Image (cartoon, rainbow, N blue to C red; front, side, top):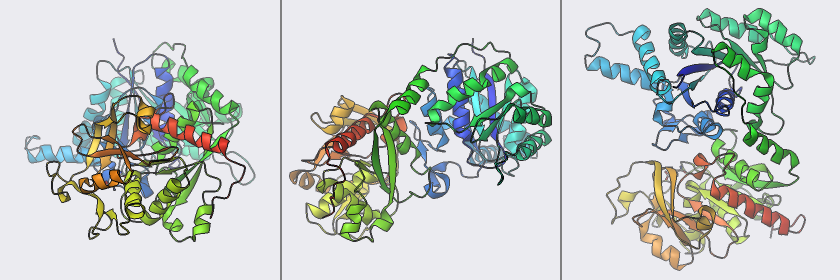
Length: 548
Ligand code: GLN
């Protein structure tokens, strides 16, 4: 029989403390004891989903199998646990209000005044129970986005207060994540944490477990002091110090800190011995590996750390499988457009592989086209993801087919040579409509190609999130001039992957292989991409100048 218990993870003091990784690490630790675990993200913003949000502000948009456009934390959940995630695992204020207002318009509230409490909070609880009451789920870890004290999160915290009251702490427990800042004299301060726990208590939730983010492990004295001020037992004050090698060691660190006992004891559940070997294996790989490959990420959202979160992680997973560390060089393609040829070439002097990630809008596109040309001509391992594939095709059309004005109709609809276009612009194909292709779908892979060598099968399933396609009008011409179409949709209609001829390793894919990559099993393209980078590095003379 399943347990149907809940762990609510909230955050205090400030954002960006790594609440997603903390919640995921707790879930991973439970899963390592053979409990069946699921996770849910609550985002208190008014957007219905993350689809319309700029990666500049909010980081990557993560796509699930069923095509939901969600917060990037769902990516962490997928990397840390083996549960599968769908649109039900991501709840926003927008969705809650949309549903309550829809019901109100249909007269479902029988003339009552519709209010935040109980109608909004009931809908929040319904969405939480939809996941947590499934017969197979032992623990649902619910992460509440934002910081305690934010106006937007109040209805969610009120719903959680009600759940804890109804189910009691034995079945619904609050874990609060806070920060221990260091002030100028080097002293670690506990006051902000005392205040954030107080803010939780003011809304009626007494956290049972406290995780403190800090750079070095907490001293026993600090734990004692916090226990005294926060009503949290000392054994449940957990040091959430920075990881030494990788975020994937955090489940191990938490275990050593005693979080497992602290949580399960309070939830009337007998702890089991966890099998943490898969996390330990990753730590060991990084500890003992003496090689690093440098991967250039050439995109337009590079200023924000989280904009390509799943790709960064997937490349690292490729590193784990090849026993190498990864260092990234982020190249802003809008800036790179302005450089002279020799300055541009110098950007790649210390680079072993180049990746162009997904994106929307025309900013930085010519810098990406220039980057793709450089990788093709200088035979540098290259992976193009979604927009990255489209860039490969535009570059090939411009420089090999000699259509100097080749473009995507997304950026230059008036170009006479739109090699990337909307389906309805392609006279012979209209049945797909112009809407975004979202979620998991099948691609048929050609034998003898790089992508076939990576996946080892002719049928693969990956997630999509794009609107434009390689134009069928140019397919033959591109192929005649050597571009290899290595994968298509099963009906042969749409291009799913391409590679360059006479090139050591290149692949462009219309889908997003990063979303299914796992730390314990890298996405096949990332594994092969890093392998090719390593080969280039090892075969290369020290400090070559590819400039001229
Ligand atoms: N903007 C392109 C399209 O809509 C690529 C999208 C992406 O990279 N995810 O087709």
